[in-house]
Length: 121
Image (cartoon, rainbow, N blue to C red; front, side):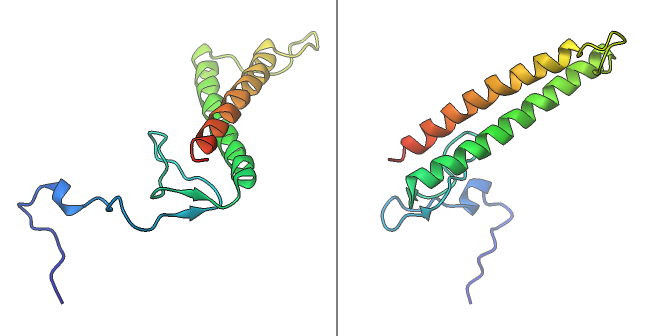
C-alpha cells in the first residue's frame, strides 16, 4: 500500500488537491454552504427545487435570526439593562425592536435562500 501521508516539508496546499472539473456531480435534496456562501457540494444538482427552497429558507432564516439574537444580546448586556416589562406594565421597547429586527432579518434570509437555490436552476 502506498504511503499517502504528506511529507513534513511539503506545502499544506499540496496535501489537498481539488476535485477535477469533469465527471460526476452531487445530487442533493438541500444546499450546504461554505462560510463564503458557495455550495459545499461539487456542482450540486437539486433533486427537488421546491423542497430545497423550503429547506434553504428555513436554514437561512434560523441562522440569520440566531446571529441577530447574539448581536442584540451583546448590545443589551453592554447597556446593562435587562429587557422585560416596565413598572407601568408596558412592553420594553427593546423587545419590540428585537421583534422588528427578527422580521427584517428573516425576510432578508429568505431572499438570500431564494437567490442561492435559483442560482443552481
